[in-house]
Length: 294
Image 1 (cartoon, rainbow, N blue to C red):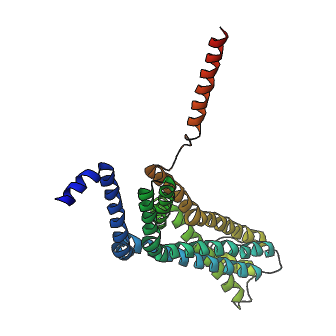
Image 2: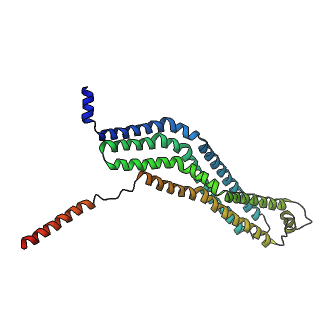
Image 3: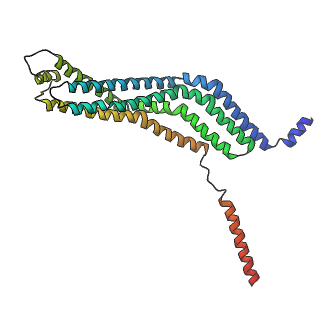
């Protein structure tokens, strides 16, 4: 009876609300560490994300090999007319290294970042929220909200952006595959012509037979490979957009959405209130002085 009386007198509605918030935060901590950290990485959408990233890495390696093959094929042509074009194609590999690095980081985030988020980031955010409830200081709540946004972003941004890219940019990704095939096909034809030992025909006659189109001189062949170069540039731009730009856009939109949900936009009104009180006091004193003069 004494305990019940003490609870009824001392355990107010404010304490009840704080206790509910603390229990909810503890529940999220337990759920995140012991359930979500093991179940979410095994979900189908996460596995599909990893498969898509692996396919993209394979595409990048095939694309890089195709540009190198075309570059070597051009340098094998008579004279050195195609050397600038070959060097340009060879220099494209720096973009492939960047795209490959981005894909590697994205895979690392999906594989290791999810566990890190569920085991450390989200529980730590909940711990800061508990400190905010106990101490009544908003600074802990702000940091907790930002950490929660970071944790959820690590978990969701890469899968969402990957699936979004597959749905929206499907035709553009087909364009990339066609460019790789065309580059490989052109390199194989040139290499086959240069390796053939038929001395009865000229190189350009052999190229005409290989490409099924009239190749009257080196300029016609260079025009063909210039078109291949343009397709390669377009394909690199598509891959940079799909692997880097779109995930960044999804991250910014996701961050903005969570920021709105967690109400992180805190206006600094605490500085204005004292000024208003001081102004009122100043106005009051001025009026009193005028009355005294009268």
